[in-house]
Length: 463
Image (cartoon, rainbow, N blue to C red; front, side, top):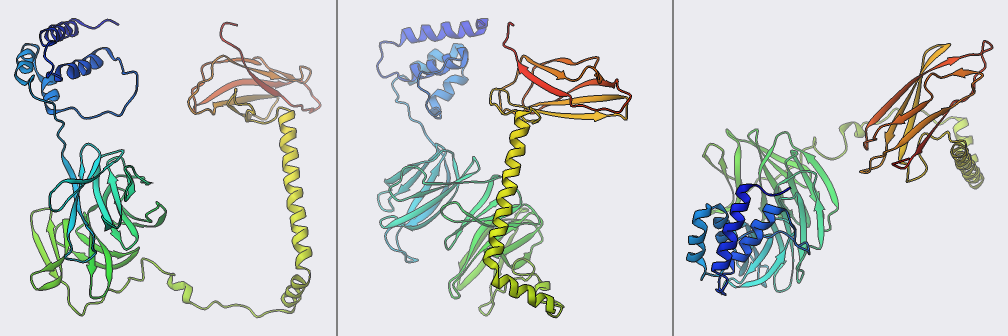
């Protein structure tokens, strides 16, 4: 297809502009924008596929201008160098070389161009730069920058990437079934809240430990750390006005609020060490101070064995037959195990022989070759002497359709009569079920039956 009149005018304007500023070496914005517009217009791609990078502010502005304004814009900015500016999406802190509470910390930034930056706390220079496959939205770090640290980043693509010191790219990847809404590290466990109203616990290598289902959607998450008792727990603000506190998957406490909580913060406030500050959806502020004598107790309804497990069962007394069977199993345990293994091997051998016989006699409903990824299922309806035979044909391949398929029924003409024994199957789309119907009339009055075989073959196009 040839481009429309508007596209030709756009191309002519760009070519004329390129000729006018071709002698200027500092105008590197024009070829970049020309290449982008050419790709969007004609659909051509570069020879080597690379990752898509965000455009600069000048290029984005140039693409939004009218044809009459483009030349003036290029003349105005031809002496300026192109700078691609990014936006900070998330940030956290990382201890520099000591783990003390008042030690110097580095600022860790997550940016819109899929990068993680670690800044020097004194000169604000970039100490480390790491790349991610997607844009980070939540960060969680542990360790010290000069010694050893581990960084977890939850991204917009629904994955969590784990990075370590001296690694430019992620070392581990945790794939979630939904988008993350929060990321908290409790000791050595990463607690992730998802949009499926659930909390998940993972190790730093990506192994799932537990899952807890929430009664409502999770709006916010934060860490509750009580230094005096060495307690670390996860606080979750739900859409139904509850704030739940979990240690691992054990429920410690539930706080009911008049409105849905959108942000949580636990720590020192004034002279109190353990203070919880909450902001609500309607703009309210709630402050709760934890008593110094308060002790969190795990709820019995969330985890642990059920109460019925503690009840004693009414076990009957041991009979003489039970004692005799126990003694026989102790004495002949080896022989009984060998007999069980023999019977198991015989069962596997019979199953393999039956499968081989089905393949040799073409009675298997599934194709045995990769060239014909087909599945056939036959259904017989009726009491006789006329039956209805329905063949359900399905393409079992993932993405390749099947074309040019012929289905033929082979039967004894002295016993049966089929008005339609040959089918020319249309194009088979993968995953869909195609029913083929025909009628079978029994010609014998003696009640003799026989097998009707169904064969399918692929015919090349043009024959």
